[in-house]
Length: 323
Image (cartoon, rainbow, N blue to C red):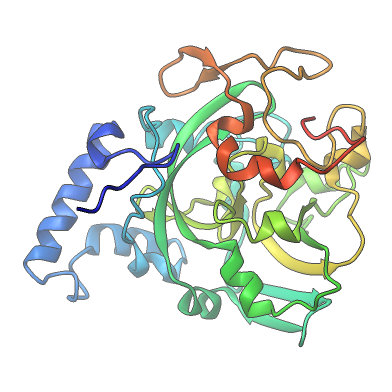
């Protein structure tokens, strides 16, 4: 008899309480699939048509199969809230940037892979998507500002992109940079910020099973304000590590100085792992506000993913791993 022992994030589908509209939409799509209708170009026409009109040719790829290993005990954050309460400093230093972010052109969009790799390359985002095994994962997301949400991301494991890049053994870090376009992003005209937004992971972090490249959200392409067409989800880290609208992946033997580290290294370090016992210099990290329910709940070390990531840090001494 095979007995499956669930990992910390593994809960049954019934235990992940979704927003009603999201459940209903998934049920409809399952009905389509059962009738063989997903093969039809018109099966998802309401969703595909609307997104196609917005210039996103990837609309037909979604929804993608859910990976049942990745779900949460918390209610899913309603889509309307998760897509309108956003940090995206390229478009402003406030939360209400969803309308302004629509100015970002997401096609054409080219991703560069450079540095310590077998062969540097540039690849169109849609060609990249065609090469990747897309799936849906439900992750907790914890902002350093002490708010949180639970989101169904679609995309692919970052380690698949690393495999495509074929880094050499000398590569120690993956450095990621976002777009730079001052004509459409007013925040990038503010010279005191060190644009473009730069983030980085160690190679061990980048190839961890949890590291995820987001291309979709709520069964559709990820909206511009949430990081279209390509963003990082590393759910054991604070949200500012999870860079949006990525255009560059550089493999290096040198640790990058990241965007917020350049601005204020005493408050925003390289590692930025979630820990309720290590406060931000200006506020507590012991609890967080769930933006979907408004409830304040206890924060868990590594955002609840500790048993799967803590070993990466056990031998690191003399560094601030948490803020």
